Length: 332
Image (cartoon, one colour):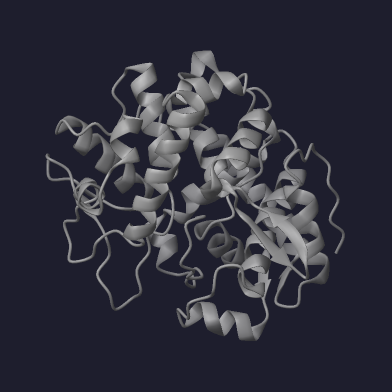
């Protein structure tokens, strides 16, 4: 099928993933399924366009909340467990139990309320495994996945924030002139954990999921609706190439897996980071949403992707769809 880039592509995400799908052997996109599902997703969009997370687990202090979001967003990866293993989940002081990204936000707010300086780059620059484990302490027998990698990322990014931007995320934002394109350029240039790039047939393929997560939180969680758009060029963002979107796109028939890949995903076989299988799944995710967006021109890629993610949280739907792929990675 034909993949036409019809919007600005400042990060080369659409162009680089387009090349993957033109050569892919394991993942394809059904144009018929795109057309069949566009109206359904459009109807859902009309009722669920709002991002409900403004102020969620924040303090109300702009600079502290900006710091919190900066450190939280870089932790937005790998929350899953295998079917026969316990899943990481935290308990809030009021007894609420939460996991996934909401568990990360809850972990930081719980720690902040306990007096742990989780908005301070000086703290994270020297944070130990025990410090970080305590922030994410679990209410189950499972600790948060990839804990050692989380410690290393927090240490490194806090040190870089101190060295380059005086330890303040607001300085990073001002250096980017609140422009999402410039912000991503600074993140990729200075912070290695944001360089979410893979190789496919010897060519670079760009995803940048964690950078997108930071931008989304700045736009919708930090900023009241009356002050949006907060980031310039926000509409140039793509979607998150993560776990849940490809699961839903596959359930819709938009993404189609060849049998060897379908068997790996459905049997919970670990798919290696940077492998052909993973790069094709993530590229298919980008373009599955992009082709749906092209059928719904009044909406942005972020809006379409967000609504598909909301649909993925529907427990009734979850019980009837096939698993998502499992990859150990700090990128999503």
